[in-house]
Length: 209
Image (cartoon, rainbow, N blue to C red; front, side):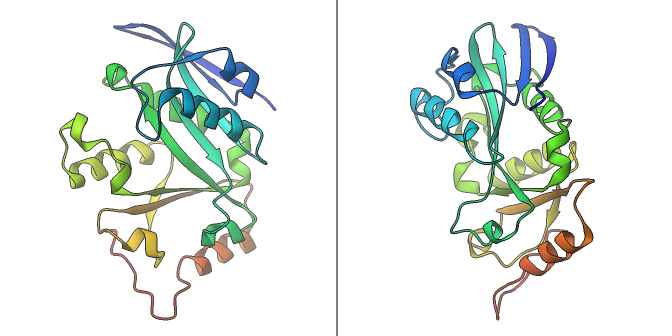
């Protein structure tokens, strides 16, 4: 698989963006101690290594010297998710930037590299954003400001809000589903995705306007 790479000079030093990376490569790096949004840094490092060996699993990361300061994951949706029934849906499972590196355009450039990879053009990439995962305490943002920040960031790489009756999305009005259709995705797969957005007999849409 072709690996992309780019560099960015920041006030805190040179940052290298690269991916998809292998489990062995991740193992040879250290995790920034601020990467605790999903689990403890050492546990998250192991989780990233596991994802690299999943079918179509991809990890893109940002590092300063030998330390991982940010990452974004791609993998097939969880088997219990409705989206797992679609053959061309790939989930952007998580993106995290160490708090000490925020404000250096790390997330923006990490996504830019990830979505420039030709593999993403073969899929409808989705992200299911749940407000209970958001780091509002350290950012000082309320739930709506955080949602606006995320949707603006993801919009820069072509992800757009879409409506759905997925119960997990409906659980909180700030939750959002976003999707980007790759250039190589066929019409039948696009239509199937549209049909799968509303599967509940009495499901109601979420107004994302």
